[in-house]
Length: 245
Image (cartoon, rainbow, N blue to C red; front, side, top):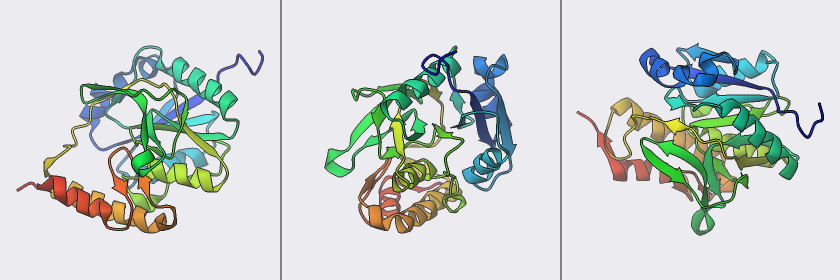
């Protein structure tokens, strides 16, 4: 079969903190139920990197390793559509190494949102044509080419690791893009208001680590934050949320 027609092989990995959420969402996806998309779940991880890097280092028999949150649902036929989108994106961007479902092109006033997802019941279908080269990705779903040198950074815990991968790729001369990978994201993380203390402190600490690591690349716009200097993540979190009693 010609390279122009063949779809790349995929494998999926996730980190699990709640088995009920996994069972109701990601594990209920048709492509995982039927066994069409090989996948592995890691429990009791202290970072996304712990699960993702271990799977990469096991040398999976796939060309792309897909990371998805446990609360993501992949609709019927998603695996083939995503593989086709990755194949087509590589025709456009031959050095593509990171791809995701939602992200940001540019930064600051020039930032443009790209992607097509259902997020907590709200359809986000941005006008940017896909595939779209990006400077930031959301963590809900992303894929990394297995033969690339990229790894998630354990210092970032469970936040900012997708944008970190994009910036790593850029510094290595590799491309990142949002492709049309429509899926459903059923996060219970509040967008504002009371927040559990553990989550409140986690986002601020991981944001600080990200800001210091990439201070030479600021400003950076992520789907949730505008970061122009160290301290911006903490200031924004403090402005929209408070610790739940």
